[in-house]
Each structure stands twice: as structure tokens, then as C-alpha cells.
Amino acid sequence: MKRMNFLSVLLVFSLAIFSGCSSAPKKATEIFTDRNTAIKQLNLANLTANRGRYEEALVILEEARRLALSTDDPPLRLKTSMSSGNFLFALGRHQDAFAEWESAAGEGDASGEPILAALARIYSIRAKIVLFDTEPGAANVQELKEQLNREMTAVKSDDNATAVGNIALGLAEKQLGRWADAESAVKKALSYHEGGLFLEDAAYDWFLIASIRSMAGNYNTSLEALEMAIRFDRRAENGFGLASNWQAKGDVLKKAGRDGEAQAAWQRAADIYRAIGLNNIAENVEGKYQ
Image 1 (cartoon, rainbow, N blue to C red):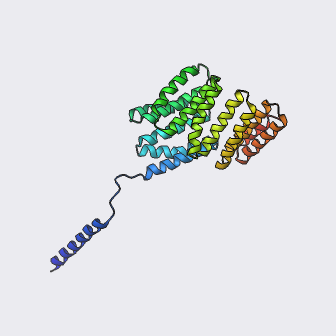
Image 2: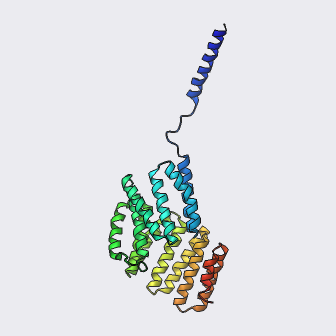
Image 3: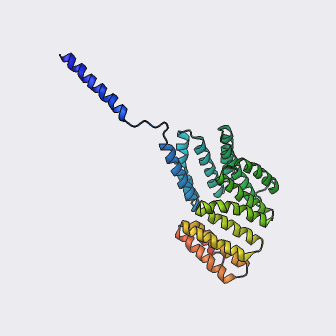
């Protein structure tokens, strides 16, 4: 009798298991917990960098990178490496930045991620264009532009990567003194950023357009572009962008011979820099007129 009772219990238990399985939700075919966390950390790192806090951004990026490696997710590995390159470049660690982009490009090619591989090379080309006037042995800008056009062909199906490419193209045309072509390229990126409500990116596009116009001697339209940049950065509550815009506004006003207005703009920039904890930059800006 005891044996029968034991068997009955086993039977009831086993039926409960089968019954529970039949009504339970199916298990997910793939788990994204760590990858979603990595994406959040990566986005936070990029946002922090947009605020001018590059050292802090690198610290935040470490966790995103760890999760990207632990999940062995190729796109995340590549994106964290590219962001690392961007932050390092902003900090003046140029060799380390180029190493990150080169590594990402190679891994992208090997992992079957041609768009991300091309994007890594675009970042590298853009940096070389930026450094053209300051780095000894810099590649010819026209050659860099030709390389850029080849990489942009590979990313034409990706709007974000194409926008990055157009910014780089605008910088190349600016270096070559082709002001209209430079502004046209940047405006292609601007169209995407404004349409997608990428506020900080749109603000940077207007900032770059202002720089192009200033280089061409068109100070009034440069100031108009900076006003647009300020509007977008205000909407994004991007203090670093706002301070940079006011600083640039002071520079343009100075070129235009409007010294009093230039000093007021620089002081406004310094006040914003100081409000966001960047006192050293604030002091440098104030040194322009003291």
C-alpha cells in the first residue's frame, strides 16, 4: 500500500510537471539582457562624450566593452571600439585612437560586418583630415577624400554611417577651400539629423557650417549658423555644445571687428563652461580678452 501511495504521488507530480509545461510561456530563442545593458552603457558613454567629459566617457565605456566581449557580439564589439577611438582622439591620444579604429575595421571585415568596418575607416579618415594642418607627414587631403568616397559607397544603405561620411567629406572640402561643396556635404548630414531629431548632432552640423562660412569670410551668415547651433543645443540641454557655440560666436565677432560683442560672447561661454564644471576651459576663454 505504501508503495502504491508513493507511485501515486510520483504520478501526480509528473502530471503537474506536464500540465505546467503545456501552459507555460515558451522560452526565448535568444537572450539579450547583457547586450541591452551594453547598448545602454554605450549610449550613456557617447552622451557623456558629447558633454565634453571624455575621460568619464571612457570609464563608462569600459562596462559596455566588457559586456560586448562577454557576449561575443560582433556589432557591439565594433561599436565600443569605435567610440573608444573617438574619445581617445578627443583627448589627444591620437595613436591610441587610430589603433582602435584599425582594429575595429579589421574585425569588421573578418566578422562579416562590412558597413561597420567601413565606418571605422571613415572615422580614421576623418581624424586624418582634422590633423592635416598639425600632424607631420599627414596624407594628402585629396587622397583622403578619394579613400572616403570609396568607404561611403560601402555604407550607402546606412543613413547614420552616411551622415558620418558626409561630415568627413565636408571637412575635406573645407580643407581644400571648396566652401560651397563643404557646406553642401554637411547639409546632407544635417538633413538626416534634423529629420531624426538628433538634436546634438544637428547642433554640431550647424557649428561646422558656421566654421566653413567663417573661413570663407562670410561672418554674418556664420553667426546665423551659430544661432541655429545654439537653438539645437538648448533643446538638448547640452551645456558643452552651448559653451562651444558661444566661444565660436565670440571668435567670429572678433574677426568681424565687433570687439565688444565678442567679449560678451566669450564671457557667456566662460560662464557656461564654469557652470558645467570645466573651469580650466572657462579660464582659457576669459584669457582671450583679459
